Amino acid sequence: MPKMPAMQAVVEVLRSEGVTTVFGCPGAAILPLYHAMERDGRIEHLIVRHEEGATHMADGWSRTTGNVGVAIGTSGPAGTNMITGLYTALADSVPIICVTGQAVSAKLHQEAFQAVDIVAVAEPVTKWAVQVKEAAQAPWIFRKAFQVARSGRPGPVLIDLPLDVQRELIEWDASVDAPLPVTPVRPHLPRVEKALDMLLAAERPLILAGGGVILADASVELRDVAEELRVPVQVTLMGKGALDDDHPLHAGMTGIQTSQRYGNASFLESDLVLAVGARFGDRHTGALDVYRGDRRFIHVDIEPTQIGKVFGPDLGVVSDARIFLRELLAAVRRRSFDNSREGWLARVESLKKELGRRDDYDEVPIRAPRVYREINDVFGPETYFVTAIGLYQIWGGQHQRVHAPRRYQVCGQAGPLGWEIPAAIGVKKAAPDAEVVGVVGDYGFQFLVEELAVAAQYDIPFVLIMLNNEYLGLIRQAEIPYDINYEVNIHYDTYGSDNVKIMEAYGCSGRRVLDPGDIRDAIEWARKEAARTSRPALVEIMIEREANTPHGAAIDSVREF
Image (cartoon, one colour):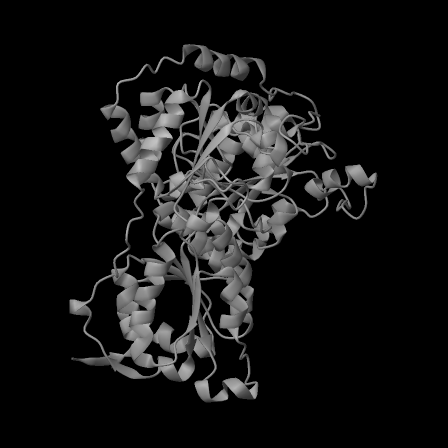
């Protein structure tokens, strides 16, 4: 068998696993891997300005392609800087691999320069964290890492590479190598039949589609099941796009923050919920006694330990979402039954018409729902959106319409500030011909703003739409029960930080909007400017400073502002 550098074998594995772009920052302890990538020349590498940015770029790339994203850093602080990105990927079931350099093996116990036990640090926020101790293991560990990242509930892996291990030669023949298989998780068919029995017995059933439907590429199967059974479909925040918002069976979202009034109302009137690939997050359920009520629940999840984690369902099914929905559809088509649900469907439709929220405000300062009205009108159904955490995430969940899977990407559970810019870079690299839009807040914008330099250097265009209230708005809102407004006001001078000038400092473009009548023209300008310059363009929209989003402790007591 031919001998080759261990890191050349690793690069061969990366390419055969479908990795076309990696995001990283070289350092002395990872240079043998960089040398191998340079010699190979077939994997594109983007130099990030912060290793957390690399993880979020890999995250965005993965959410868009469905493949495993890769981020690379050196030893010590490079690895610790990746922890937030690993946590984000674990929380949202995103398969990425973070590769770190490490001091030579013989020095690890001597507090060598930038030597940290990154495996121990990363273990709580990964599916697997491993240090390669023998060079001959390197390609096999990478193969295993891709298999682990993809298997079951997807998630992140960290691989730590001591410098001496990277430098060794090993025997490896890439011509007879291939990715390790991922075993599909199939449902126990009697449980599928039982789920169908429960659905047919229900008078007011709902299907709840979570992020697992999107991860499993099961949107077509979801639609087919819903249409065959004539059952309304709701989505979670992570499941936005699993069913087109314009589909007649779409029944909105339930929750105590990111929800629609009609979504909560129809959920409260339901008598059975089939939850597929959803984890019953606390911002979705609110108070569990209200959420559960007297209705029955079927919980379908690829990860067995998710079932019963929040509450015990009436029926649990362990399965990949797409395989379950296909088996359910097959079972439906074998049955003879009356699927007329005209009364229930009419009720859900009437709630949609009666319990909407306004978005046609013309006041100055601008009210946030008006921004989403313009976003919905301007951008097409194939546009990719990325957004993170803050009041704007809640407004987006309430008002933004989504028409296809993977087109609305949100760091739903971990909620790291600054996620949008690097994630947008990853999305655009994965879908270079698509239009990409980041919806950001003024505070989180600056957490990883340095990654604008990556977009400028590598000609990566996208539109940024900022809702700027010069506040830590979500925290100000959370302070209301405490009757305080404390250390959340970040206003100074005229508009606080001059975000247009910040864009210009990175070689990008920006425009500020004060009047709602100017929003659409500014967005159209940004679309053209991003295309013309091949760089990001910002529309900074100055909104009402102390606006609140509808929220509450339970889905039957959401307060409207």
